[in-house]
Each structure stands twice: as C-alpha cells, then as structure tokens.
Image (cartoon, rainbow, N blue to C red; front, side, top):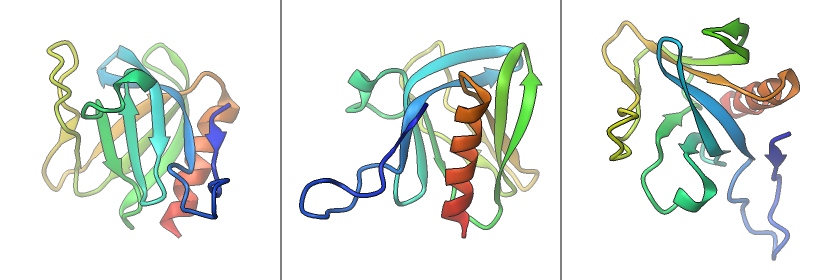
Amino acid sequence: LPKKSLTSSRRGTAPLYTLAGALYHRYKPSKWTRLGYCVLTPDAHLLGFRSSANQSTSPTVSLFVAAASTVAVYAGRESGMQHVFKVTHSSGLVGPSSGDSELPAVSAHGGGGGALVFAADCEEEALSWINVSLLLLR
C-alpha cells in the first residue's frame, strides 16, 4: 500500500508528502509506464518519477490536484490494466518534459479539459490515492 505521512517525526515539521508509492501511468492509449515513486505533497501536487533515485530530476508527471475543477474517480479496468483511476481537470493538465524521448511530457491544453490516467497494484491502493486527493480538495 502507499505510505501515508501525516506529520514528520522530527520536531513537528511539515511532512514531505501525504502519500507515496508506485503507480502506472497511461501516456498513450493502451501504453503504460511504471512510475516507481509517486508522491502527493502537502501543497497538493502529484509528482511521479520513474524511480526514487530520480527524485533530483524533473518528474515524469506533475499535477496540481487542489483546484476546485479537479476530480479523481475510480474507473476499474481500462486499456488492459486493472485498478485504474483518472484525475481530470477542466482547464487542462500540464506536465514537464522528463527529457526522456520514450515518454513525452504529459499535457492536455485548452478549455476542453483532460485527464491523467493511473493504475495501482490493487483496488485498495487506487482508492487510497483518490481519497487523499479528495481530502486536499476540501
């Protein structure tokens, strides 16, 4: 299961993340990549890295999830993966380029909106990501 961090154990400082764990990210229809290290930060950013060793580089996926127009929903099975959930934003989603030619920057521009599609290893993990995201929206 993803790790939850409510407070830092040292001197009551703010936590580095509210949730951390591995996810799969759909970057093209039926094309998935494993993000070995994903975090949901206290300032409501979902950041996805290929591995925990790559945290010093730009994230492969970056999304601000605390906007009123952001919604996270469980989709079940989609594009050959189980435990899929979608994060949508009505004004579009933008992610920085990772510098990796295999995986382009995640982006959806324009007023039509867009969605980032993720999959977890089990339903409980997917629901944990959704529930914590929804708490940040309140």
